[in-house]
Image 1 (cartoon, helix red, strand yellow):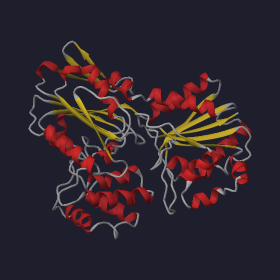
Image 2: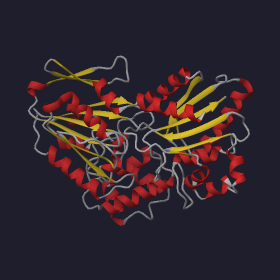
Image 3: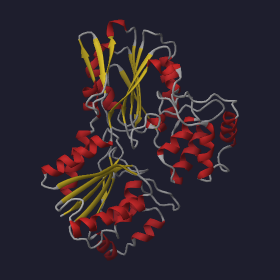
Image 4: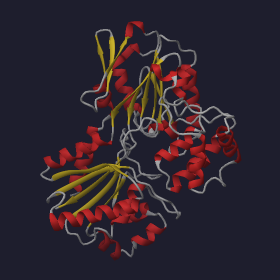
Length: 445
């Protein structure tokens, strides 16, 4: 079953390959650049007469930015006037026209601020005959920090770190980020005016809401200063937020700071946001591969969310149901789900949301013969660790007991990484070059 998990994960990565997604969505037809959404059968196509484009600027941000940029260069070649993309550190090839920079993730750093400033320089002074191609993927929010006037990078680092530990959803985290930034929440699109903008987006957010992916640099923002304040208060972080942050958000609520641009703003008339891949792409790739391996592949959902520990209980219950009733699918079964869970951190251990879910599942599937569960981040990293996730089976609890390891104690400390390292249950892939949420695989012989 562990060999099957490796094959299934490779199938997910192939299905969500950023370069392939770019090539499916971008082509040159005679003298026109044609852009379409490859995730929908009847999506509209957008046409740009290249002979009328004075400058074509390529920008990118996210964990998939290098692969996306390389594919764009392969399609457009010398038509690219200049380009810059920022990503998390890893292995990637150098490009001729598009410069690749690295920055900190998930906590923003000075390298990210420098990259954001260089992007602003590239789009400053563009005209109506210019075209900006923006390549957006998961991780962009942290990789492209540009603090609002009066705020420091340290202010944003503190707020980001506290929210990541609080159990806030990605939508809530990004709502706050957008109101502490000069680029997020449609503000990059505003800086590109009057040039036209096309964003090609690899989604890492459940449901692919444009305003939430990478904090929506080129999309209208539905959130407000008041909501950002409410989120910090909801997670009891308002009192410990930096004074400059509180003053800025309160000034924004009073109208003393400009709101992020909203739907209907004229600036978006020249902007197209196109989804080129998402979690469903990867999940369906897994289900297809499961059937090829002789398993009954079944897609549970691509919208799994909530606390990691609660999701483990759900998958444990499903495993028992499949074994007892053959529903929702008969054995040998591969149930696959996609989404993004949260972890409310109370301990000082090391781990990530996938590893936390797997650790919580140890007791849930204990003794269910032939049952294996894997939780994997499609980007190859789970939290601040070198693991993509973890795998457990019906005998993990027995092996842990034999080694004197109590899963509950490690859960209390949020120390899933060390638990699975001792048991050799970590899934380590290295950076994958893509990012379309997480995968949860439940295999039952």
